[in-house]
Length: 135
Image 1 (cartoon, helix red, strand yellow):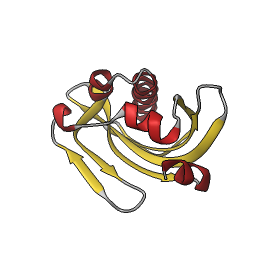
Image 2: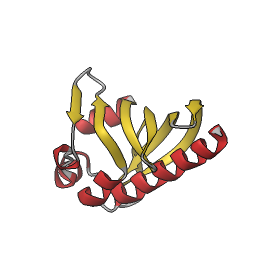
Image 3: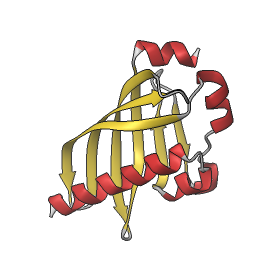
């Protein structure tokens, strides 16, 4: 059933955000399916064929943006099958004092690989405030 798939996809994204906010790259990697594709806002494409290839520099994110944590604000399922769910997500980024400094929309494709639900594709569009924070 797609309802079960949609629930599993939401749980996978909740786990991703929790690990992301803990700045735990090893845990983040476990929330993904591979190959993992990131399609950046400027059209750049990054493919991580394995978990070890998925990289995020949380220290640089803190330095460059003043990032402390992110929230998954809204999630709408655009399409789903028993093995794949397309999620249209609105997210926010915050400083340590709790002030929001940017928002964005992202398409996450969450897939089921051998019983593991994980995000396999993401394509984000930051708002002007988040773009400015990125420098």
